[in-house]
Structure formats: structure tokens, C-alpha cells
Length: 294
Image (cartoon, rainbow, N blue to C red):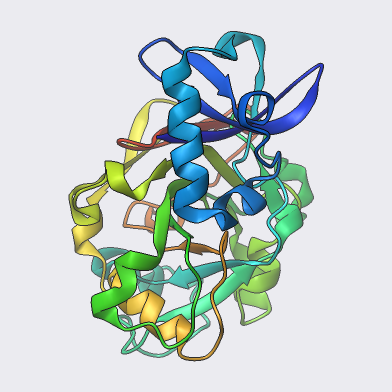
């Protein structure tokens, strides 16, 4: 299923996007399910079963064109967990760019973790506010993002996918000069509006092999990033095991798995985003997350 957060004159709530008919099934109206995505994810399989029944009923359908789509988690309950330098070619391009103040080695020996502030989240179609970066060094990073379902601590790699609820897309927009200047990544990646997310959550049952998913980022129609998730240095089970060794993962937690080569600072001179640009990140079967730059 394709789960979305949407709004109309009745407010914001959770629904299912039926791609075949381009309609939204209003789950809150039909099944008295939570209007908040974090609360819905916490229902686990029972929530999904009720959602499937609602879809099959054929009732409560709204034309997708008549509603506004938001980020699946418009304001996540916690910071978004992120992984740095997690594709070999990107690790090398970032290391050679002159903006990497994080480590001496190009390819990390263990996962590099950082977080993005919840207030940085915006939805599909919303403008990335480049003026918030006073250093004028705005860059893009398309990333597959894991949504945690059943929580836990000390989750093993072999059990990791049992805790994956689904997948969405994040554009880890970054102020590169701030990232370098402060010698850590939190400030440069947590500016207001610097975390486009969406357009939906595809539930895990729709993805037989996450490694087969292809990440494609374009800027104004020009292909900048193109890689398969199988090229991750540290795969999804490794990331879940690493994180759950030190913290309890909970339903609705988000793990952005890292970006591939082709970001703006990989070019000479760097190709930073500017007002009027259009950034699109596509990962099927999730779809395309598209945001203009203001």
C-alpha cells in the first residue's frame, strides 16, 4: 500500500493512495483510524489490515487532485536518523570535494550517523527555502528512507527486516559551507525546509528486495544521481543493528540510508541549488519526490 498524509477542508489525516485510480482512501473517515501517521504506524499489522479492508470497500474515496499531499510525517516525533558517506563513489567525491571535515579516511569503517531536526521537514511540491542558508551553498542528496514498524533494542541483522514497516524518500538538503565550517553535520542539514519527504510510504510487503530499488535524482531534468540501493556500504540490516545497539527504535522512527554520487559538490565548480531550480528524486515503487527551490 501507498500510505499518505493529506489535507482538505476537513483537516489533515492519513489515507491510502490508489495509484490505479489516482484516488485517496480516507482511513480516518472509514475505519476511525488515527489521523497521525506515527500513531497509525504504531498499530502495526492490525492497522494495515483495517486499511486494506477500507480500500476494498470502495468507499471514502477522494480524487487525489482535490487534496494536498504532505510529508508522510509532517513533524516526526524525533530527529530523523541519517547515515553519511554510505555509497563508495559518494564517499570518495565528498572526501575529495574539500567540504568534508568529518574524517581523514574517504570510506568509513563504521556507519557515520547524524540527525536532522524535525522542523526541517517539508512535503512534496513545497519549496526548498534556499535563502535560509546564508552561505549560499545549498546542495541536494536523494535518499531511500526506512520507516521502522515494530520497535526494539539489540535487533540482529537477520531479524532487521521484520522491523521495517516501509519506505519513503528524503532529500537531505544541505548547506555545505555550514556543514564544513562547524565540523559536524547537524547544523548544515537541519535548516528549516531542508528535509523534503514523500510522496508516500510504500509498505514493506510491496518491496521484495530493497537492494533492487534504483535512486534517480534530477535537477531541472538533468540526471545527477543514479544508483541502486544494493550499492550501500552499510546495508539496511547493518544500520538497524548498529542503531538498536545503543537506542530503542520505536514505530515511526526514520532512517535515511545515505546518498549516492552526483551531488552538487561533486562537480568542479560545485553546482549548488538556486531559486528557480526543480529537484526530483525518484525511487520506484515509492514514486517521485519533487520540490522547487525558492
